[in-house]
Length: 336
Length: 228
Image (cartoon, rainbow over all chains, first blue to last red; front, top):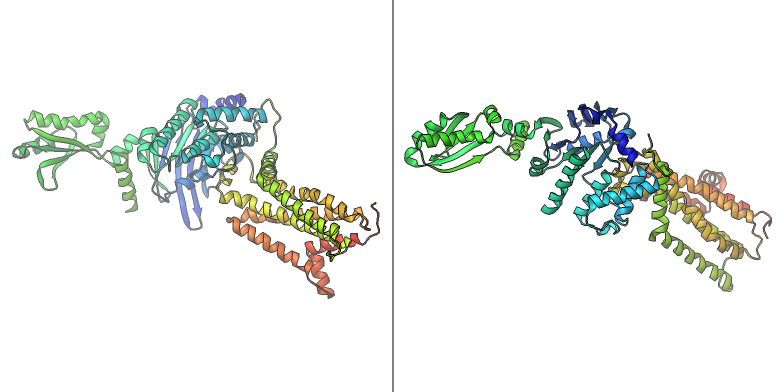
């Protein structure tokens, strides 16, 4: 166990800022259907990267290619500097929780982890220690010796994560890890994922449809649509570019002309107009670069402009700027 | 693959798979129920043959032959079905992917599972041997013929289990893999139960592994007594 930790810690990627996972132009086609097209990105130690996309976007295929289950039709990738052609060595450093991961229901939880530890070439006594340690860290419901068939969905997912951590992986792929979990289970799973990335320094690639959990846990995202990357980068940047934040403000009807002029002249505002024919409700759209520089607090400039012009503000709310808005805008734009 | 250094002895990948498969097969209810059912079947057969001679239409030698034929057929078909289920079953239960995500090569997984399914034959044979010995008392049946049955059974088990494994590897559906395996077994078994004659009959018997094995075993049975 310690030997594996030492070996993984001694890799060049851990010592430098070198990417742990480097993906260069990966494509995967099935007959005439291109499931993944020209996927390229780099992932660094301790990062949690969200892999997003509508159904059939190619997320699962991308993960299956990167976990060496499928051969890329084109392109290459390396993990810890090991080229994808050395698949056994890649898998030695990889942990995966597939989307539809079955479990042998008649096995006990501890027996399951011990078996996988043995498959990762731990000796019998080491496998026992690994199973005990992982289950105490990850399982936390004291049912390691019960049959897996009696576990709830959440318990099985946690067991799956424990299995994915058996080899102290450099990179972990989690495909829909919170699917089917109740809100408490989702929260626990996200905490576990953050712990894996933060404390262990593993790189996590999180494939999910739940954008709230991506915003909560990921540092960067990659959005796929029709197998192609349509956006990649920091969440804040993508939100600003794809779903600019706007401000909806309601003022006293008799001051609407003054209000509109004041908002239009406020710093950072690119456009202002009344909404749905309501003369007393205005929407102000901000310049993305300006907001990037000043942050969301920059939108206070519009309020300041209104109060400076002695316009009473009756209501004030932010619109857009959410990851879901950006996601929908990007995927819709790409489909059109 | 670089093995992880540790304090204990490291096992090869296929042997870990084999160990777990053996545990699943023989320590779980499936294997024990199988052995018990087979033993009960042979017990009933032996009882009828030994205790109720008036009602027994087969002579002693034919009864022993029947037991050996039953053992061979059951051993082969079970090994075939277990191996046919091994990979396609895991695929259907969605447990194969996680196995293939380990550093094991697909070949190591297949070897471990194939070897586990082959153990059906020796276990079935071990269960049958005491009954065969009990039934052969007083007959001119040679030990050599029992050894020949074991050898033929071993060869047929390896051949059929390998066939089942090949089917299981390519089949996405467990039902398809098991169905085709069983169909192939029945088709190959049929000539042993049919009155084939002439050069075509001889040819069919000779090229068919089941009928050829059965014929070889029966030839052995005709040999002079060398046992007790």
